[in-house]
Length: 452
Image (tube, rainbow, N blue to C red):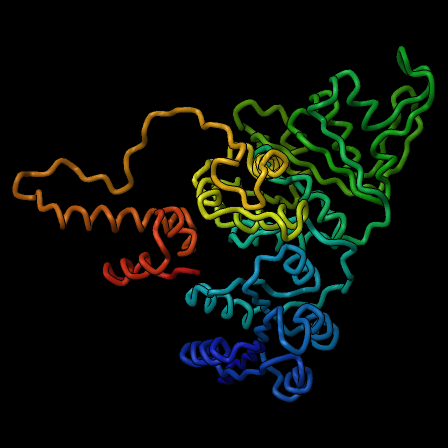
């Protein structure tokens, strides 16, 4: 049996050597290159079954090399790796046909499982198209990485997309990214179904003829016409009146509809991206959506996680907002960042953006402290049990040092869980220096795979 060969392209010698050793230990043949130079020639000569490619190389751009490889070696799986959470690069990589996209530091078990899938199932090449603009997303959390991957895979097609997630997580940004990274020449048109009076929803979506109803003094094109050849974003689709769901289903199936007050069919080639902040699946409590419409809208489903489940993205979001609004002049103190990380963010990214914006306007200093943050008080709630709280102890089990160590380990485990393994964030949550966290982790032993 021929041993599958893997080529690692990374400018970090330590990473190259570690990956080559790990792949060889797993039974693969592995070799490496420090950059773009010579990559095409090496691949043509060695014919590897998989390329493991870093995004940022000293002598070139990994995404540009990916485009070349997909054109010249369309059946060669390429896994993209980076130390940075970058939505635009992730979307571009997946759209160009990357097999997958992973972030450093790596979980070795997950990485080897990914390599096994890639070696077994090389992909057919995809159409190469350049994106038109930068996406507004930032982050490094696994949840957001999955969002970007799905956007990249879905952008080149025409299938309807259903985006789910709480209010304020950025569902419209997902829809805009799908449009911007797609090939449609028409406009991106957004409408919030929940914001429209029920009596005007049909006219707003499908248009109306003059005299169709009281106040209709002129013919008006609806959103489906305006978005023809483009993308129509239907926000809060769960609020669409049941009486209009059949009409929407027909548009999804054959692209035809009629203006209010007219019987002439109009064809729209708008791609539909819908979003909802509440459950709309069949049999969900409070859902009034037809089952056939739900499945037609959700050919591709993207769930955007709430901010409280990806706290590791908060520092990156803060940095992005600060650079956008104030350049390098403004910054947050460590205590201010700690306060942001300790908050539950019921309003998600939208609330974080508003808090920072108002704080920047009202703060007099260039470095915002915890007291400068215009952060609303959270609603009081019953105090939760302390993670790792100890059960009632028998008198002979009251050794203070032993019990404190048990509680300390439980708290560290909980912090690492909340931080999704990010030790820097876990240290912030615990209110200790990272060096102390490392010391205590060594003291207690293995905590599994962790990231910086």
